[in-house]
Length: 386
Image (cartoon, rainbow, N blue to C red; front, side):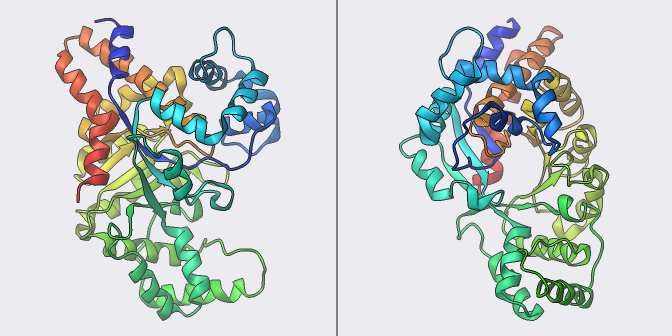
């Protein structure tokens, strides 16, 4: 079977998007506004002069053109006009149907005030066989609870209550962005140290009108461990942002290997931990999945960002990681088209890799089994089994 034949076969397999975000409410009127979603950089020179010179952006325009049913070379003005005529709901429904998306695990904590809510998303998906599952962002909820409970003991009581019985509350997973805030090198912290850090944060917060953004390493390290303790009997996955991100992430502190002490801690051996994104630490993350039964590797943003290099990245991952531990995700960072780009890119890359391995002797039935695992079965098992 040739590359194109196997890739076409993958189109028949539904994907579950293990990690994505809801789209923004605002419309996009210019190419400059559109291009900013295709880079993690805040440097305006990247958007104005360099995004169009990546492999990622022009290929994305071609893929979006195809999704819109347009032929020929993509025209950005025509794309923007058509996407705005369809509207967000129209785009969501078209993408879900054409990309054969069978479910989304959505983190609503990013740009929450400017993005569609879980009720909005579920309304857009009404009538489609595509459940929208809710991810609770740990640090964001902790900030809200701190403002509502400025005393440490009251806060911790509220914190424990908040993260108890999560599935009953409709939560499918927790998400931590501690990699952005203080890094993944989570250190042992006592309750008294956490209380002191809490009081320092609250005292500092009284001196400003800026919304609370929790960055205290002492307090964050304590809260992450407490949250893992609370969910350790709930069979709830905990997603950790790792590796690439906006320019405010310190890539050296976002290496998933820094979580090794968490994986070694026997209290958390039954907590499924999903390492998000992982690029450029794909081999490191794959190693962790090979060593620890509760470690999982997510491909969101690695695919579709790497584009023509994505097959090589998949080979690096699948050379070490059990195929039962690898999850597809788009990230879809506020631009709804990423739901499409991710699904198209993973099938394209996975089709190329598995087709090559079939030619080298991998049984086609095994290749199909691997495709089903990565595209939907692993996520179904992880997020929907109680």
